[in-house]
Length: 139
Image 1 (cartoon, rainbow, N blue to C red):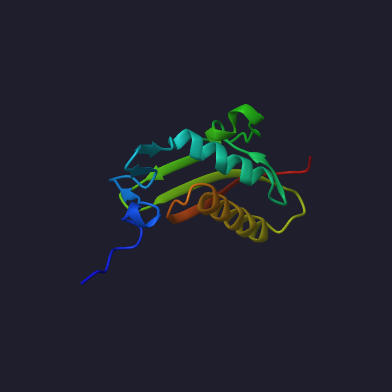
Image 2: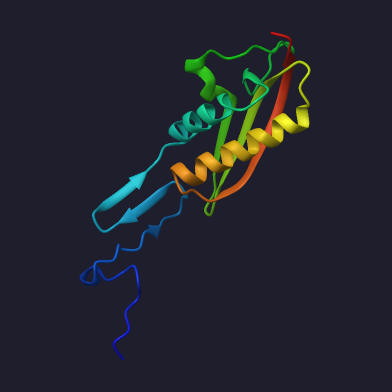
């Protein structure tokens, strides 16, 4: 029998199969491993969220004294919690939406944009993207 497993035999000019480790953000290749930090994932998510219609900005996950503040661009990762499980990634995103926008549509747009960004840029399996609207801003 002269069959071979596609993706594992370099003699046939095929790419070696990536092996998964205990974390979805790590890939092991024959040449070494690639690990993407949760903070780097959060930065990618923040960039995707900033392009979403109706989002004024990111908000901190923990509100103090019920005051909602829009985070500065360099602090946007603080409005994102990345949870890595054995099989997939879950992201919690804390945003401020623009007054007059339909909140459910903004949240759905954020979910779609972030899901696309994670899958296209990192190829990470996504378990859930949770959007938490921390406030509404007229600015």
